[in-house]
Length: 360
Ligand SMILES: [Fe+2]
Ligand SMILES: [Fe+2]
Image (cartoon, rainbow, N blue to C red; front, top):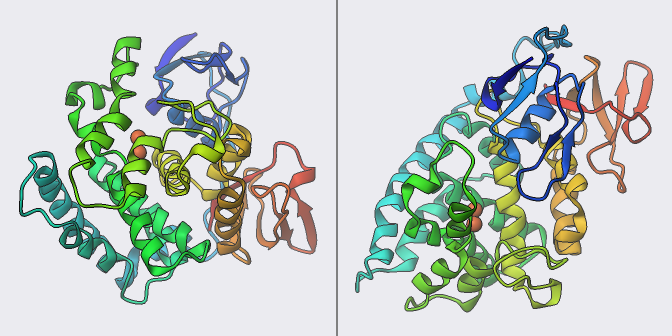
């Protein structure tokens, strides 16, 4: 038996102990689990630093190379469209990092609209919601810093608003709410924010002050009250299990509810220091597992359904190694659609343990 840090885990390693979350003592994985990519993603998502594994790993299922030679993600990354998006995104992140200091320093000439222009630029050039989601998933390979997280959440919240058919003004508020949601984190010591190991309970309570701090920073700024509320309430959950105020559904600002989903989705899909971008279906199953009741019912359903629909008719690889096409979305188990493999139809909702591992 040996202790291995989560980012060094590889598929095929066998857990020597049950694994629980640090705070709420939820069991994440059982002793004896043969680790797969999705398990390692869960451990990383729940910030499990290390686990005990058996000395001898089991032979993992090695996926066959993609049919067309290059995977979906590799093809996307070679496209001119992606290269342009990446360049625009990097420029945007650099500008944002610089300009956000003006807010913190209370610069009198600070102008929110100027700050938003490059963000809206990322949403233009004929880029569709699907396009942007795809590109964000693949961009994660390059950088996962706090500033890029804020831009990701701004773009994802804007797209959620589009899917909810919000009007132009609402979309602007949604984008700003996403961009500034974690601004309070800039007031938390960097040594805590970037600490690689487990936070002490004191450090964790300091991190948990970032919603109020964000609200305070945004108070003197000429900005919609929804944007301030999103900074304050994006960690609230509809069932009352969030923080800082333990608000329940009706009391949480709807923009904060949209930001909460974008925030968690971004954290899930970037929780991977050890491999390529996390498959969106694994993120969806993590939402389903965590409990959809934590989120606004309309927003979470529209969000997850649109993501699943994005990948309808795409070719995917299952964890069994089989390759097929997504042909039918199962509304009660969004992460488990029906897949056509050769002449067979596999309804994943009826096949425990079988899941979509990769879009190819
Ligand atoms: Fe936050
Ligand atoms: Fe966040």
